[in-house]
Image (cartoon, helix red, strand yellow):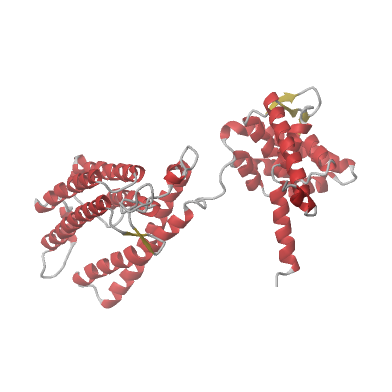
Length: 123
Length: 334
C-alpha cells in the first residue's frame, strides 16, 4: 500500500506541476502597474500565490529578455530599485493566458459535474 | 569586512554570465535589503532577519542557475539512453579486449605474472576512466550543441515520415556517437603519446612536420563523415565510397610509414628489451596487420551494410529485439 507520506509527496508534486505557469500570468497582470522584485513578491503572496523569491527574481529577468516586461532603475529614493513594467506584448500574452485559464476552469468544472450534461450533448 | 549578504551575493555572481553581473548584483542586494527591512519592521533583529531572508532565498548556486537559465544536467533525458547503451557496450566489449591485448603485450615482453596482473588492473582503470570520460564528453557536446536533438526533433513539426525507417540503412544515435568517438580517441592518443604514456614518445616525433597533423586532419574528416552519414540517414553506396577513401587515406600512409621504419620513435624502440625477438620488426608486423585487417574489415562491413540497405534485407533493430524489413512508404514490402 502507498503510505500517506508518499501520497503527500505525490500531491505536492502534482500541485507544483499545476501551479507552474500561474506565476507568469499573475506577474504580467500585476506589473501593468510598475513594481520591483520584493513588492511583487509581497503582492503575489498576499493574493494567495505560493511563489518563492528564488523562482520569481530569475523569472522576471527571463520575461524581460522575452520582451514581455521592460525595466528601469528608479534612483529617486534612498534605495535604488529596478522597476519592471508589463509591455504591450506582455499584456496581450497575459490576456491570452487568462482566457485559457478561464476556459480550463470551465472545462474542469464541466467534467466534474454529473453525467446529465454528457447525455444532453448527444442531441 | 564582507558581510553575510556580500558573501551570498558574490556566491551567486560567481556562476552568472559576466555581462549580467553588475545588474544582478544591484538588484539582488536591493531585494535582500527590502526583505530584511520588512522582517526588522516585523520585530526581528537585523542579524536574524538577514539570516532568515538568505535561508528563504536558498542555495545561491541554484539561484545563479535560475538567472543564467542553463540546463541543470550534463546529458538530458533524450540522449541519456544512448549514452548508457554506448557506455555499457564499451565497458563489456572494448575494455576487456583492449586490456587483454595489452596484457598479451606485457607477457610477450617477458613480464612476470604479478606484473601482468598489475598491468591489467592499471589498464582497466586508465582505459575505463578514459572511455567513460570521452563518451560523456562527446554526449555533453551533442547535448549542448543540439546536434543530436536537431536530428531527433527537427525544426519543423513532427510527421510520421520522421519515423526511423528501420531499414538496414538506419544509423542509431549510439552508432553516431561511436563514429565521433573514434576520431576523438585517435587524436587524443596521437597528441598524448608525445607527452605522457612513456618516458620518450612512442611515435617518431619527426613526423610532426607532416604526417601526424595529416592523420589528425583525416580523423577530423572521419568525424565530418560521421555527421554527414547520420544526417543523410543511412548506408548508401556513396557512404561505402567515402568510408573506403577515408579508410585508405588513413591506412596507406600509415602502413607505408611502418614499412619504411618511420613510424615508431627510434629512441622508444631502443629502450625496449624483448629478449631474443626484435621489437621493431614485431611491433611493425603487429601494427601493419591490425591496420590492414581493420581497414579491410571496415570497408567490407560498410559495403555489405550499404548493399543490404539497397536490397532492403531484414535487419535487427538495436534495442528492440526485433527484425525489420525495408518497407515502402505505403507500408508494403518493397
